[in-house]
Amino acid sequence: MNTPQNNTYTVADYLKQRLEEIGLEQMFGVAGNYTAAFLDTILADKASPIKISGNSNELCAGFAADAYARLKGVSALYVTYSVGAFTLLNTIAGSFVEQSPVILINGAPTNKENAVEKNAGLLYSHTTGYQFVDIHMFRPITVAAERITNAKQAIHQIDSALTALITQKRPVYLEVTEDTWRAACSRPEGTLSSGVDATITVSDVDAAVKATVKMMMRQPKSIFWAGIEIQRYGLQKEFLALLETLNQEHVLPDNQIKFVTSALSKSVIAETHPWFEGCVTLNKEEVASLVGDDGVLVGIGAWTTGKDTGNQDIRSSHTILAAHDGVFVGAEYYPAVQLKDYIEKLTAAFAALAGQQSPWLHGLTFPKPQQLCVTAPASHLGYDSFFKAMGNWLTEDDIMVVDAGFPLIGSQSVPIPAQNGFVAQAAWLAIGYSVPAGTGVKCAFPDKRAVVVVGDGAFHETCQAVADQHAYGQNTVVFVLANGIYGIEQYLVNPNPFRKPPVDYSDELLDTVYPYNDLPQWQISKVTEAFGGQGRKVVNLEELIGVMEEIRCTPDQNFVVEVVIPTTDVPATIQREAASKVGEDEIENPNWPPAGIF
Figure (cartoon, rainbow, N blue to C red):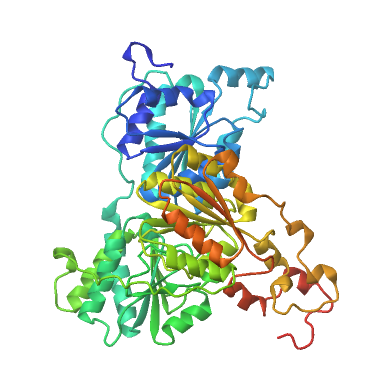
């Protein structure tokens, strides 16, 4: 192992110490010689809390790091220049969009190699000839990107990037040349903290709270939308305290305040809570049904992403949308607002209206969670019966991880009994996210069991993560819903095969699933013979229930369960939409719409 000589304090030591200071405990990645000096520095310190975990590939590492950071607050990736880093563009973009604080550490060629390549035209391994191509690609999808080439500047660049990470809860990128790692530098001074100056936000917070109270008192039929930032910033207790104040003191007459979640924020509060009204898509029609003409939708930590709002702009005189970077109250906007301050001051304001002290001054008691209603699942094994069985099977010791497409849509009806018991990439929507995310979830919460639900198309992308899970000794379970096609892609272009009955176009192309949406037919349940773990295949509901019981009786083993789904089976939500949805190809058909279809 290469270690610094004569106990010299190096750039590698500096980065390691700062990472430990901000609470980093887990790194994912694929080793390369350009980052070896940094990894060696961590390994040389037996007392370091940082664990280095290797992955089957960079894509699996990136998605695992993203899921871990969502639940624990920060994670890091280590890769080598270009060939490793390029793969992570997809994963880091998702972390950026969905505010997951991941540190990407990219080892780069030495300063000498860079100079030779620039002046002599010699291409070294992993280089394209384009100067600094890696950092140029990552700048648009990180909140800070630094290329570190000398020890004197390194300390300031590291501190600046990590401060941006703490402040904005989004990814940062550090590119360090190989010969800089072991260069001597000074030790850290002071500690890192958020770059937000709370003193400049006071007036905006007060104004936003005043406007919020005024609107809610004028339109008392309010319902809250618990958004993803409640989980990202650890504000579940504060959110429930706000609802507790409103409901215990009847500040808004004759109106119990409840809350909904959306695809991105599902399970930020346990879905057994008595005030939980459901996980919904908050399009304009849904908002109108929830609050009518005399109510307000109050989004706390919520983002208006496409999946959450049905690709609609729902802001109106009946909406309050509060997030960490600002609050919309109707048409008014208050930019300099920290979400925690807003929630606490809003709670205090309503407590004052009720003539009592804020509950922050004494202990809080919340209603006991309702028990889930367990009913016998239907006999047909399809998306709906699978998710119904899943809802009866999940416990508070499970964290459900769901992939994009039909699994994400179908899972919205599953009651999640644990707070933060559901993880999905519901804004960026990269297929293949869920399986390696399950790895990160289990690393974040070793006492929980990650339960992954993924389509067979997405499973093809990142199935190697099963090998990681077995190598780590995890008991993760991967349910692969195998319908043999890219179902969501077919649905978006032409939903006709999913209609019951389908429209008869007398056109074989429009009446059937397109060939380019067909998947290679894998024997999915047998991948564990190569990767490790237990493989099972189920073709009916009785077999599924039997395997679920076996999994519960085998708490120390990882499983891959191939769940055979009929090709044209879809979740109930899709089935309802398909009756009236017009596919992209159907619009172009001269016979559309057929007489009497709608």
